[in-house]
Image (cartoon, chains in turn cyan, purple):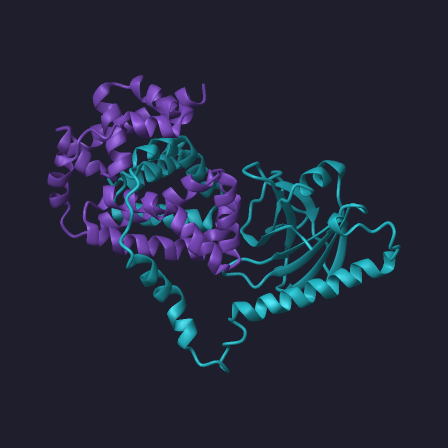
Length: 239
Length: 179
Protein backbone atom coordinates (compact mmCIF):
# COMPACT_ATOMS: atom_id res chain seq x y z
CA UNK A 1 0.00 0.00 0.00
CA UNK A 2 1.49 3.29 -1.02
CA UNK A 3 0.93 6.57 0.73
CA UNK A 4 -0.87 7.94 -2.31
CA UNK A 5 -3.40 5.09 -2.31
CA UNK A 6 -3.87 5.51 1.38
CA UNK A 7 -4.65 9.16 0.90
CA UNK A 8 -7.30 8.78 -1.76
CA UNK A 9 -10.65 7.55 -0.48
CA UNK A 10 -10.14 8.47 3.17
CA UNK A 11 -12.21 11.32 4.58
CA UNK A 12 -10.26 14.57 4.62
CA UNK A 13 -7.66 12.81 2.48
CA UNK A 14 -7.11 15.78 0.19
CA UNK A 15 -6.61 18.12 3.12
CA UNK A 16 -3.98 15.84 4.67
CA UNK A 17 -2.35 15.18 1.30
CA UNK A 18 -2.06 18.95 0.82
CA UNK A 19 -0.61 19.29 4.33
CA UNK A 20 1.95 16.54 3.68
CA UNK A 21 2.95 18.16 0.40
CA UNK A 22 3.52 21.51 2.10
CA UNK A 23 5.37 19.93 5.03
CA UNK A 24 7.67 18.30 2.46
CA UNK A 25 7.54 14.67 3.64
CA UNK A 26 6.16 13.02 0.51
CA UNK A 27 8.22 10.84 -1.83
CA UNK A 28 9.15 12.04 -5.34
CA UNK A 29 6.26 10.34 -7.17
CA UNK A 30 3.69 11.59 -4.65
CA UNK A 31 5.04 15.12 -4.94
CA UNK A 32 4.62 14.89 -8.71
CA UNK A 33 0.99 13.85 -8.28
CA UNK A 34 0.39 16.73 -5.86
CA UNK A 35 2.10 19.20 -8.18
CA UNK A 36 -0.04 18.15 -11.14
CA UNK A 37 -3.19 18.46 -9.04
CA UNK A 38 -2.21 21.97 -7.95
CA UNK A 39 -2.05 22.96 -11.62
CA UNK A 40 -5.29 21.20 -12.58
CA UNK A 41 -7.62 21.52 -9.56
CA UNK A 42 -8.45 24.88 -8.05
CA UNK A 43 -9.91 23.25 -4.91
CA UNK A 44 -6.74 21.31 -4.22
CA UNK A 45 -4.57 24.35 -4.98
CA UNK A 46 -6.53 26.27 -2.33
CA UNK A 47 -5.97 23.54 0.28
CA UNK A 48 -2.24 23.68 -0.45
CA UNK A 49 -2.22 27.48 -0.25
CA UNK A 50 -4.03 27.40 3.12
CA UNK A 51 -1.43 25.01 4.53
CA UNK A 52 1.39 27.15 3.16
CA UNK A 53 -0.14 30.08 5.05
CA UNK A 54 -0.35 28.05 8.29
CA UNK A 55 3.22 26.75 8.18
CA UNK A 56 5.03 29.68 6.54
CA UNK A 57 5.98 31.41 9.83
CA UNK A 58 8.49 28.57 10.38
CA UNK A 59 10.41 29.89 7.35
CA UNK A 60 11.69 32.73 9.55
CA UNK A 61 14.36 30.22 10.62
CA UNK A 62 15.97 30.23 7.17
CA UNK A 63 19.03 32.50 7.26
CA UNK A 64 19.76 34.97 4.47
CA UNK A 65 22.82 33.90 2.49
CA UNK A 66 24.11 36.11 -0.32
CA UNK A 67 24.37 33.97 -3.49
CA UNK A 68 27.50 34.28 -5.67
CA UNK A 69 27.43 37.05 -8.30
CA UNK A 70 27.45 34.48 -11.12
CA UNK A 71 23.87 33.32 -10.41
CA UNK A 72 21.87 36.29 -11.74
CA UNK A 73 23.66 36.44 -15.15
CA UNK A 74 23.06 32.68 -15.46
CA UNK A 75 19.32 33.23 -14.82
CA UNK A 76 19.22 36.00 -17.42
CA UNK A 77 20.98 33.74 -19.94
CA UNK A 78 18.40 31.02 -19.34
CA UNK A 79 15.46 33.38 -19.69
CA UNK A 80 16.53 36.00 -22.19
CA UNK A 81 19.62 34.89 -24.17
CA UNK A 82 17.76 32.79 -26.72
CA UNK A 83 15.24 35.58 -27.37
CA UNK A 84 18.02 38.13 -27.91
CA UNK A 85 19.88 36.03 -30.47
CA UNK A 86 16.76 34.95 -32.36
CA UNK A 87 16.44 36.39 -35.85
CA UNK A 88 14.37 39.57 -35.82
CA UNK A 89 11.86 38.84 -38.62
CA UNK A 90 10.67 35.49 -37.24
CA UNK A 91 8.45 36.70 -34.46
CA UNK A 92 11.15 38.93 -32.98
CA UNK A 93 8.88 41.93 -33.07
CA UNK A 94 5.96 40.12 -31.47
CA UNK A 95 8.02 38.81 -28.60
CA UNK A 96 9.72 42.16 -28.00
CA UNK A 97 8.70 43.85 -24.79
CA UNK A 98 9.47 47.23 -26.30
CA UNK A 99 6.99 46.56 -29.07
CA UNK A 100 4.24 45.63 -26.62
CA UNK A 101 5.03 48.62 -24.46
CA UNK A 102 4.84 50.88 -27.48
CA UNK A 103 1.60 49.30 -28.57
CA UNK A 104 0.20 49.55 -25.07
CA UNK A 105 1.11 53.24 -24.85
CA UNK A 106 -0.43 53.96 -28.23
CA UNK A 107 -3.53 51.97 -27.39
CA UNK A 108 -3.91 53.60 -23.97
CA UNK A 109 -3.70 56.99 -25.64
CA UNK A 110 -6.26 55.96 -28.24
CA UNK A 111 -8.56 54.52 -25.60
CA UNK A 112 -8.16 57.58 -23.40
CA UNK A 113 -9.29 59.72 -26.30
CA UNK A 114 -12.13 57.33 -27.06
CA UNK A 115 -13.29 57.41 -23.46
CA UNK A 116 -12.77 61.14 -23.05
CA UNK A 117 -14.28 62.44 -26.29
CA UNK A 118 -17.96 61.90 -25.47
CA UNK A 119 -17.53 63.74 -22.19
CA UNK A 120 -15.33 66.65 -23.16
CA UNK A 121 -16.11 69.31 -20.62
CA UNK A 122 -12.66 70.73 -19.91
CA UNK A 123 -13.36 72.56 -16.63
CA UNK A 124 -14.75 69.40 -15.00
CA UNK A 125 -12.34 66.72 -16.20
CA UNK A 126 -9.50 66.41 -13.74
CA UNK A 127 -6.55 64.45 -15.11
CA UNK A 128 -5.57 62.96 -11.74
CA UNK A 129 -8.96 61.30 -11.51
CA UNK A 130 -8.13 59.11 -14.46
CA UNK A 131 -5.99 56.01 -14.04
CA UNK A 132 -4.87 53.51 -16.65
CA UNK A 133 -3.71 49.91 -16.50
CA UNK A 134 -2.40 47.44 -19.02
CA UNK A 135 -3.52 43.94 -18.06
CA UNK A 136 -1.47 40.98 -19.29
CA UNK A 137 0.04 37.79 -17.92
CA UNK A 138 2.66 35.25 -18.79
CA UNK A 139 1.40 32.25 -20.74
CA UNK A 140 -1.79 34.03 -21.78
CA UNK A 141 -2.65 36.01 -24.88
CA UNK A 142 -5.41 37.92 -23.08
CA UNK A 143 -4.57 41.62 -22.93
CA UNK A 144 -6.86 44.39 -21.79
CA UNK A 145 -6.28 48.10 -21.55
CA UNK A 146 -8.21 49.79 -18.78
CA UNK A 147 -9.08 53.42 -18.22
CA UNK A 148 -10.68 54.20 -14.90
CA UNK A 149 -12.58 57.46 -14.62
CA UNK A 150 -13.09 58.15 -10.91
CA UNK A 151 -15.39 61.12 -11.51
CA UNK A 152 -17.79 59.04 -13.55
CA UNK A 153 -17.27 55.83 -11.59
CA UNK A 154 -16.62 54.14 -14.89
CA UNK A 155 -14.13 51.54 -16.01
CA UNK A 156 -13.54 51.41 -19.76
CA UNK A 157 -11.96 48.20 -21.02
CA UNK A 158 -10.47 47.61 -24.44
CA UNK A 159 -9.69 44.03 -25.43
CA UNK A 160 -6.29 44.12 -27.16
CA UNK A 161 -6.02 40.37 -27.74
CA UNK A 162 -7.34 37.01 -26.55
CA UNK A 163 -10.76 35.42 -26.37
CA UNK A 164 -12.90 33.73 -23.76
CA UNK A 165 -13.56 30.02 -24.32
CA UNK A 166 -17.10 28.77 -24.92
CA UNK A 167 -19.00 28.47 -21.63
CA UNK A 168 -16.53 30.75 -19.84
CA UNK A 169 -16.58 34.38 -18.79
CA UNK A 170 -13.87 36.83 -17.88
CA UNK A 171 -14.34 38.39 -14.45
CA UNK A 172 -12.61 41.59 -13.33
CA UNK A 173 -11.09 41.72 -9.84
CA UNK A 174 -9.58 44.45 -7.74
CA UNK A 175 -6.75 43.48 -5.41
CA UNK A 176 -5.65 45.98 -2.82
CA UNK A 177 -2.48 45.05 -0.94
CA UNK A 178 -2.82 41.54 0.44
CA UNK A 179 -6.58 41.73 0.86
CA UNK A 180 -8.74 39.14 -0.85
CA UNK A 181 -9.69 40.04 -4.42
CA UNK A 182 -12.95 41.99 -4.75
CA UNK A 183 -15.09 41.25 -7.80
CA UNK A 184 -15.89 44.19 -10.06
CA UNK A 185 -18.16 41.99 -12.13
CA UNK A 186 -18.17 39.83 -15.23
CA UNK A 187 -16.63 41.67 -18.19
CA UNK A 188 -19.25 41.94 -20.94
CA UNK A 189 -18.17 40.52 -24.30
CA UNK A 190 -16.95 43.05 -26.85
CA UNK A 191 -13.89 44.96 -27.98
CA UNK A 192 -14.57 48.12 -25.97
CA UNK A 193 -16.96 48.06 -23.06
CA UNK A 194 -17.76 50.05 -19.93
CA UNK A 195 -18.49 48.87 -16.42
CA UNK A 196 -19.90 50.88 -13.52
CA UNK A 197 -17.95 51.00 -10.26
CA UNK A 198 -19.53 50.84 -6.79
CA UNK A 199 -18.58 53.58 -4.29
CA UNK A 200 -16.80 51.02 -2.05
CA UNK A 201 -14.61 49.83 -4.92
CA UNK A 202 -14.11 53.41 -6.06
CA UNK A 203 -12.53 54.36 -2.75
CA UNK A 204 -10.01 51.53 -2.94
CA UNK A 205 -9.22 52.10 -6.60
CA UNK A 206 -8.21 55.66 -5.79
CA UNK A 207 -5.38 54.28 -3.65
CA UNK A 208 -3.89 52.43 -6.62
CA UNK A 209 -5.02 48.81 -6.72
CA UNK A 210 -4.03 45.90 -8.93
CA UNK A 211 -6.63 44.74 -11.43
CA UNK A 212 -6.81 41.12 -12.56
CA UNK A 213 -8.91 39.13 -15.03
CA UNK A 214 -9.75 35.51 -14.23
CA UNK A 215 -11.50 32.81 -16.25
CA UNK A 216 -14.79 31.84 -14.60
CA UNK A 217 -17.87 29.78 -15.45
CA UNK A 218 -20.52 31.70 -17.40
CA UNK A 219 -22.07 34.31 -15.12
CA UNK A 220 -18.98 34.64 -12.95
CA UNK A 221 -17.47 33.00 -9.88
CA UNK A 222 -20.01 31.42 -7.52
CA UNK A 223 -17.67 31.61 -4.54
CA UNK A 224 -16.99 35.35 -4.47
CA UNK A 225 -13.31 34.62 -5.13
CA UNK A 226 -11.48 33.83 -8.36
CA UNK A 227 -11.81 30.11 -9.15
CA UNK A 228 -10.06 29.96 -12.52
CA UNK A 229 -6.59 31.02 -13.70
CA UNK A 230 -5.67 34.70 -13.82
CA UNK A 231 -5.13 35.45 -17.50
CA UNK A 232 -4.25 39.13 -17.18
CA UNK A 233 -3.24 41.54 -14.41
CA UNK A 234 -1.70 44.94 -13.95
CA UNK A 235 -1.65 47.96 -11.63
CA UNK A 236 -3.52 51.20 -12.09
CA UNK A 237 -1.30 54.20 -12.68
CA UNK A 238 -1.93 57.90 -13.12
CA UNK A 239 -1.61 59.13 -16.71
CA UNK B 1 11.52 46.49 1.73
CA UNK B 2 7.83 46.63 2.62
CA UNK B 3 5.60 43.69 1.62
CA UNK B 4 3.50 45.96 -0.63
CA UNK B 5 6.65 46.88 -2.54
CA UNK B 6 7.57 43.22 -3.08
CA UNK B 7 3.94 42.57 -4.14
CA UNK B 8 4.26 45.29 -6.76
CA UNK B 9 7.55 43.86 -8.00
CA UNK B 10 5.94 40.43 -8.40
CA UNK B 11 2.95 41.88 -10.27
CA UNK B 12 5.25 43.89 -12.53
CA UNK B 13 7.36 40.76 -13.09
CA UNK B 14 4.18 38.96 -14.22
CA UNK B 15 3.90 41.69 -16.86
CA UNK B 16 7.43 40.80 -18.03
CA UNK B 17 9.03 43.93 -16.60
CA UNK B 18 12.73 43.02 -16.45
CA UNK B 19 13.71 45.99 -14.29
CA UNK B 20 11.19 44.85 -11.67
CA UNK B 21 12.51 41.28 -11.94
CA UNK B 22 16.11 42.50 -11.38
CA UNK B 23 15.02 44.44 -8.30
CA UNK B 24 13.01 41.48 -7.02
CA UNK B 25 16.13 39.32 -7.34
CA UNK B 26 18.24 41.86 -5.47
CA UNK B 27 15.69 42.10 -2.65
CA UNK B 28 14.90 38.42 -2.16
CA UNK B 29 17.70 36.19 -3.55
CA UNK B 30 19.59 35.99 -0.22
CA UNK B 31 16.54 34.61 1.60
CA UNK B 32 15.74 32.15 -1.20
CA UNK B 33 19.39 31.04 -1.42
CA UNK B 34 19.26 30.40 2.34
CA UNK B 35 16.24 28.15 1.75
CA UNK B 36 17.95 26.21 -1.08
CA UNK B 37 21.17 25.77 0.93
CA UNK B 38 19.35 24.50 4.02
CA UNK B 39 17.38 21.90 2.07
CA UNK B 40 20.06 20.83 -0.41
CA UNK B 41 23.13 21.19 1.85
CA UNK B 42 25.39 21.60 -1.16
CA UNK B 43 26.48 24.98 -2.54
CA UNK B 44 26.69 23.99 -6.20
CA UNK B 45 23.33 22.29 -6.05
CA UNK B 46 21.79 25.27 -4.24
CA UNK B 47 23.14 27.72 -6.85
CA UNK B 48 21.66 25.63 -9.63
CA UNK B 49 18.34 25.41 -7.74
CA UNK B 50 18.26 29.18 -7.16
CA UNK B 51 18.57 29.74 -10.92
CA UNK B 52 15.65 27.41 -11.56
CA UNK B 53 13.62 29.07 -8.79
CA UNK B 54 13.94 32.52 -10.38
CA UNK B 55 13.13 31.10 -13.81
CA UNK B 56 9.93 29.74 -12.22
CA UNK B 57 9.19 33.08 -10.56
CA UNK B 58 9.49 34.81 -13.94
CA UNK B 59 7.14 32.26 -15.54
CA UNK B 60 4.58 31.92 -12.76
CA UNK B 61 4.45 35.41 -11.23
CA UNK B 62 0.80 35.80 -12.30
CA UNK B 63 -0.24 33.08 -9.85
CA UNK B 64 0.69 35.30 -6.92
CA UNK B 65 -2.61 37.16 -7.41
CA UNK B 66 -4.67 34.13 -6.33
CA UNK B 67 -2.53 33.18 -3.32
CA UNK B 68 -3.29 34.16 0.28
CA UNK B 69 0.42 34.15 1.13
CA UNK B 70 2.43 37.27 1.88
CA UNK B 71 4.75 38.07 -1.04
CA UNK B 72 7.94 36.85 0.65
CA UNK B 73 6.21 33.67 1.89
CA UNK B 74 4.97 33.03 -1.63
CA UNK B 75 8.52 33.31 -2.97
CA UNK B 76 9.90 31.13 -0.15
CA UNK B 77 7.24 28.48 -0.94
CA UNK B 78 8.42 28.33 -4.57
CA UNK B 79 12.05 27.98 -3.47
CA UNK B 80 11.26 25.42 -0.75
CA UNK B 81 9.11 23.23 -2.97
CA UNK B 82 11.64 23.36 -5.76
CA UNK B 83 14.55 22.47 -3.47
CA UNK B 84 12.54 19.59 -1.96
CA UNK B 85 11.64 18.26 -5.44
CA UNK B 86 15.32 18.45 -6.29
CA UNK B 87 16.51 16.61 -3.20
CA UNK B 88 13.87 13.88 -3.76
CA UNK B 89 15.22 13.41 -7.28
CA UNK B 90 18.71 12.63 -5.96
CA UNK B 91 19.70 9.02 -6.47
CA UNK B 92 20.89 7.92 -3.03
CA UNK B 93 18.60 8.91 -0.17
CA UNK B 94 20.89 7.27 2.40
CA UNK B 95 23.49 10.02 1.99
CA UNK B 96 20.87 12.54 3.03
CA UNK B 97 20.06 10.73 6.25
CA UNK B 98 23.68 10.99 7.35
CA UNK B 99 23.76 14.65 6.47
CA UNK B 100 20.49 15.25 8.30
CA UNK B 101 22.01 13.89 11.47
CA UNK B 102 24.59 16.65 11.36
CA UNK B 103 21.94 19.34 11.24
CA UNK B 104 21.37 20.90 14.62
CA UNK B 105 17.87 21.35 16.04
CA UNK B 106 16.39 23.86 13.64
CA UNK B 107 14.80 26.16 16.19
CA UNK B 108 15.45 29.70 14.99
CA UNK B 109 17.79 31.84 17.04
CA UNK B 110 16.43 34.78 19.02
CA UNK B 111 17.46 37.08 16.19
CA UNK B 112 15.32 35.31 13.59
CA UNK B 113 12.40 35.19 16.02
CA UNK B 114 12.67 38.89 16.76
CA UNK B 115 12.70 39.72 13.05
CA UNK B 116 9.69 37.56 12.30
CA UNK B 117 7.55 38.77 15.18
CA UNK B 118 4.14 37.55 16.33
CA UNK B 119 3.26 34.91 13.75
CA UNK B 120 6.48 32.99 14.31
CA UNK B 121 6.15 33.21 18.08
CA UNK B 122 2.68 31.79 17.69
CA UNK B 123 3.67 28.79 15.60
CA UNK B 124 6.48 27.95 18.02
CA UNK B 125 4.03 28.24 20.90
CA UNK B 126 1.76 25.81 19.04
CA UNK B 127 4.67 23.45 18.28
CA UNK B 128 5.42 23.45 22.03
CA UNK B 129 1.97 21.98 22.62
CA UNK B 130 3.03 18.89 20.65
CA UNK B 131 5.14 16.12 22.11
CA UNK B 132 8.80 17.04 21.87
CA UNK B 133 9.96 14.48 19.31
CA UNK B 134 6.91 15.15 17.12
CA UNK B 135 7.51 18.89 17.13
CA UNK B 136 11.13 18.17 16.17
CA UNK B 137 9.95 15.95 13.31
CA UNK B 138 7.59 18.68 12.03
CA UNK B 139 10.38 21.28 12.12
CA UNK B 140 12.88 18.90 10.52
CA UNK B 141 10.46 18.08 7.74
CA UNK B 142 9.53 21.69 7.06
CA UNK B 143 12.96 23.30 7.26
CA UNK B 144 15.16 20.51 5.88
CA UNK B 145 12.65 18.87 3.56
CA UNK B 146 13.16 15.45 5.15
CA UNK B 147 10.93 12.65 3.82
CA UNK B 148 8.77 10.25 5.84
CA UNK B 149 11.37 7.54 5.18
CA UNK B 150 14.26 9.68 6.46
CA UNK B 151 12.34 10.86 9.54
CA UNK B 152 11.25 7.30 10.37
CA UNK B 153 14.84 6.10 10.28
CA UNK B 154 16.17 9.04 12.28
CA UNK B 155 13.53 8.67 15.01
CA UNK B 156 13.78 4.84 14.88
CA UNK B 157 10.05 4.26 14.32
CA UNK B 158 8.24 2.43 11.49
CA UNK B 159 7.28 4.60 8.52
CA UNK B 160 3.55 4.23 9.20
CA UNK B 161 4.03 5.37 12.78
CA UNK B 162 5.88 8.46 11.57
CA UNK B 163 3.08 9.17 9.12
CA UNK B 164 0.44 8.90 11.84
CA UNK B 165 2.52 11.12 14.15
CA UNK B 166 2.93 13.85 11.59
CA UNK B 167 -0.65 13.81 10.32
CA UNK B 168 -2.03 14.13 13.85
CA UNK B 169 0.58 16.78 14.63
CA UNK B 170 -0.38 18.83 11.59
CA UNK B 171 -4.08 18.76 12.50
CA UNK B 172 -3.31 19.71 16.13
CA UNK B 173 -1.03 22.46 14.93
CA UNK B 174 -3.73 23.93 12.70
CA UNK B 175 -6.30 23.67 15.48
CA UNK B 176 -3.94 25.66 17.74
CA UNK B 177 -3.13 28.25 15.05
CA UNK B 178 -6.82 28.85 14.32
CA UNK B 179 -7.70 29.18 18.00
